[in-house]
Every structure is written in C-alpha cells, then in structure tokens.
Length: 229
Image 1 (cartoon, helix red, strand yellow):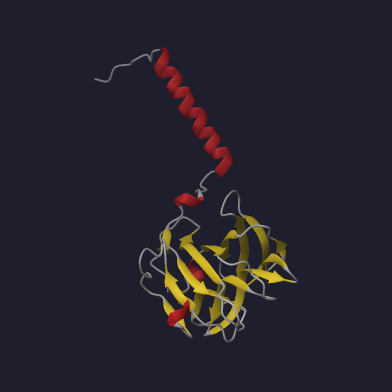
Image 2: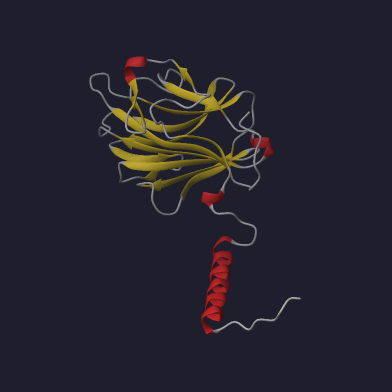
C-alpha cells in the first residue's frame, strides 16, 4: 500500500526550484522546441587526424591542404566559383524530408588582402555552385555574404539552414553568442545536391590559409533522419 508522505521543508524547496526551472526552460524554448544542442546530428567532422567518411575533393591540389590541430586548413588559391581548387564536397541532406543546418567555423590564418578573397559554405546542384554563405573581402572590408553584413572579427561560425525550397543564412562572430541572420530566401531544389567547404580568390604571389573547424549537419525538426542522401 502506498503511503502519503509529507515532504519536509528542504524537499519542498527542492520541488519548487525544479518546477521554476522547468517553467524558465519552457519560456525560453517554447513547448515542443528543442535546443540546438539537442538537434539530432546527421554528420559531423572534427578533422581529428583525417577527413571523415563521405567527403570528395573537387580539383584537389594535395600540396595546398592539410589536417592540423583538429582542423582542416586549405590554402586560398586564385580562382572563382567555377574553377575553385580544393573544394571539399559531400552529399547534402534530403531537405524534402525536413529542415537541416550545416555549420562550420572559419578562421583566416592570414589576413585577406585580395579583392573577393573568401571562404565558407557552397551549395551545389548537379555539379554546379548554386548558393554560397561566406566571409568575403570586398573593397578592403570583411562581410558575411549574402546580406553583406559587416564582420570585424577573424573567426566566424557560419550556419546554412535549408528546407524544401528555402534557405536561412546565419552567422556567429567568434563562434559565440546568438546566431545572427544575414539573409533568407528561396533555394530551388535540384538533382544531386551537395554541400561544400571551400575558399578561393586568393593572391597568386602569397600563401593565405583558411582554417575550417567543427563541421556538422543537424536535423532541426527533432526527428532522427535516415542519413544524408
């Protein structure tokens, strides 16, 4: 037989504190809304000694990339989106089945000097670049593109959120604090979608290197996906 037990003062205070914490959590996240830390991970790569499974190189130059200190470092070589060297690609998640976030932290190891020197995330459709979320040097100043948001720091976390036919481009200076939205809009679906980390428009007469860290793809709507397609 269950007995009714009257809580003492200490137990009652603990229960009240737990109830208040729950209320605070619900007020911040909202009912049924998971925090970013709880988002199911589809794929992640910390670049711990080698590349993770599933990556492929586009126009690889083995002398211009390296794994160092849990990061991928790529030299910013001359070129444009259609001729970029050492673009690292992998299959994109099937966004017809949910919302996904692609995150990577980008750091310039050498201050950019070349007009349009850039690094970040590029979305590919059928082997062609369709969209980019990058930090880019324009007229001597750094910006997050799209949106042309001024950027004062050397390190930035870029986050590209994709759904069935839309994108949200976000960023976090120094990879800290809240995500800021740079732009959002339509991103038409297409065949053979891939996501890439890359850099280009580098100077021909100097070695500029980019450090990529903490790459991950997460499912934002709370269901565990089968895997990136």
